[in-house]
Length: 87
Image (spheres, rainbow, N blue to C red):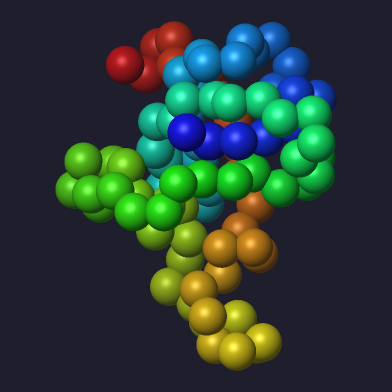
């Protein structure tokens, strides 16, 4: 599941499938709305097979943060796109 604030997904319903894309890649996700979630953050389950397009690593560039040299999960902007026309 991909958890986000409902205001960030206008036109989508809880449980809808959507594409989540960045400059690096795209994966299909199932949306779960939480009005308590911060609007600027999308939470995703950890794990998944990269070769099946289910891994959050497909969305992030091969960079390290300046704070602890971790993956740039929190610094990667993403966009929701409808599944229609991409399936």
